[in-house]
Amino acid sequence: MGGFTLKKDEKKYQLIPEGVHHAICIGLYDLGTHFDQTFGKWNRKCLITWELPDSRIEFEKDGQQQSFPQTISKQFTVSFNEKSNLFKILVSWRGKAFTDQELEGFDFTSILGANCMMQIMHTKKDDKEYANIVTITPLYKGMPKRDPEGTINLYSMDRLEYEATPSIPEMVPAWIKEIILKSKEHQEVPAKKEGDVPF
Figure 1 (tube, rainbow, N blue to C red):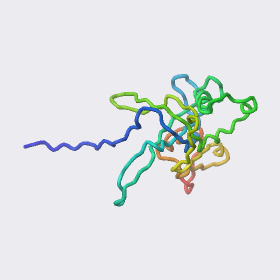
Figure 2: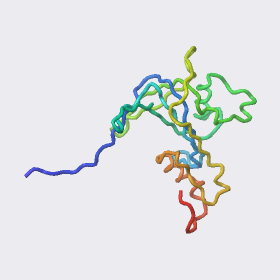
Figure 3: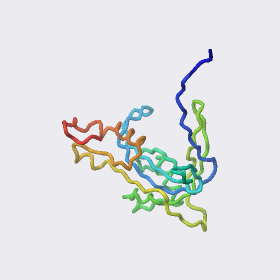
Figure 4: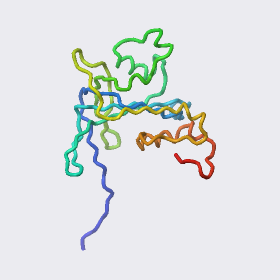
């Protein structure tokens, strides 16, 4: 008699092609403070998300063919130090150095909706292939800026110190929410009482 083996379905993921892509920033998420095992210290983290309008996901829904831009995200330590990865990415993205005035207080949310050119390369780890951001630069000369197709999202945790029962908006993707819930800020929130609104 033949065997009858059940296996968990593998989630199919359409990898973003390697190369240079037009990208638009559509998300800035404050992930809170997390412990860095490598350096043995706590760091504030953030996550930036871009959509790639020319790299599409095609699928059928309710009998209609749908097309949406692929998205890619990257985590950063929140630091405006000139040696930090975030600082280097921002300078490369702008294509110019920060002025002394900007160094005194840069509006981080100004990246939302901003266009750029993004180089993506593939790497393999544990038999899986991933798309990684290599460089971010300004649009090529003469290229028109484009508006995002997706919703622009901003999430900040600064308000948590004023709330005994903080909540995370529904617009925050579930996988990002899982990271936020592990942050020092959420772990230190006083224990919720019966009847409190859950996360």
